[in-house]
Length: 95
Image (tube, rainbow, N blue to C red; front, side, top):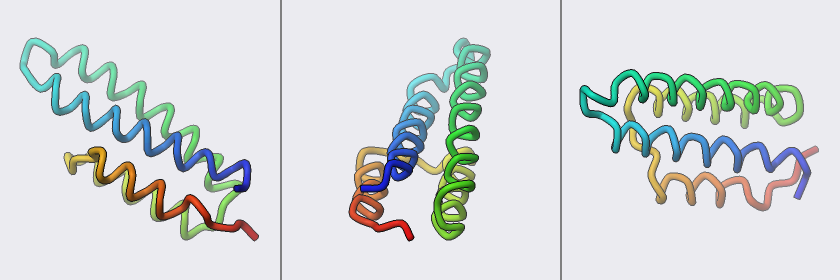
């Protein structure tokens, strides 16, 4: 597997964490903490997406970028989604 493919796994893990935080910390008393955590996760994802954009085909970048935006808008990224994303790209070859 190409060394840059690991970025896909990193994004998948961060999206899972993002989604899980949204699920578990949705109460009003957690709002400030949740906002801080989600901002930090987005920063991590943004930096990894930058590497994806530089080093992987644009179709992969676009796919991941759409997936991130959907998760940020509230679509759950659970274990099933994480595993599906990893399987989708696990054995791909980068040209």
